[in-house]
Image (cartoon, rainbow, N blue to C red; front, side, top):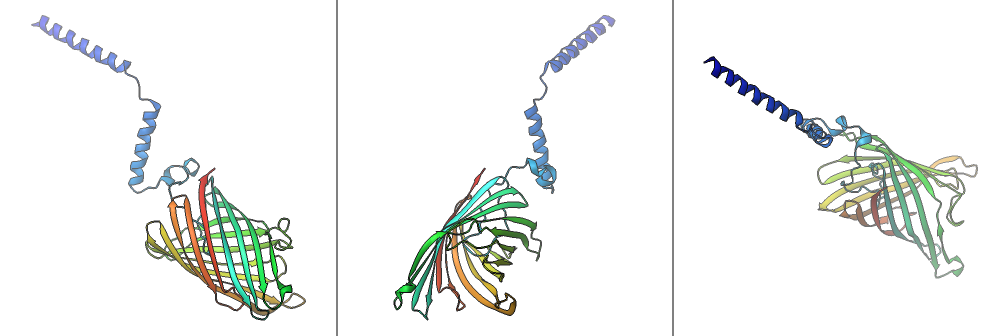
Length: 316
């Protein structure tokens, strides 16, 4: 009996020894496997109510290249959305304004042969902006040919920034600040400014529903030729029609202060109010086409205007 018990204990020890050797000889988990397990745990935590931003530092996140492009054209209302970090965005297009001067029976056409806005996302709160335009003016008079004019050339270059202020929360809109400085050092003599010309806007947006958004701006600018300030306002209703096709309806204007010979504010303004509408079509998430047109409401406003353009976003 004792002999059989000894044989059984010896067999059990042999089995334990073999299993221990197999465990010691097994390779440990590789680093990629460990990272994959950690990533799975992070996703599980995120799905349980926490966001990835709260777990992973901003510096380690990948720019959202799959989100649709957000542009400042074709309407006059600048959007509060910034270009994702380390990404470029080009917004370019052409436009023409039609106007008449009843006193001289002249027809006036103001062309923007090309306007290009280049943006670069420096961070989630800050983007760099560069603006260049090639302009033209054509005046035709039937009664006085001396008034005829046909000139073109580069406008002054402008540099600026867009700074994120706050996200939308309830009735509080999403807000960003835009600031530009038009430089008198470049451009054709017919179009460039004589002095530094600053301009700024607060850009705001409220989401009304899944299909409707309300965007609006308020700000000011100077023309670089005088000390007269101009107040700017815009209001644009964005409408999602079908997939990738959106439209907008907009009212905007410029109210320029009037000054006397001594350049003192006289208390009155010259009002330029306009209305326009247009469409945008998203070809891809990073590529958008646009077309728009509008009319002038005030006497000093152009009679009508048309515009079309292209916007493209790409990584650094």
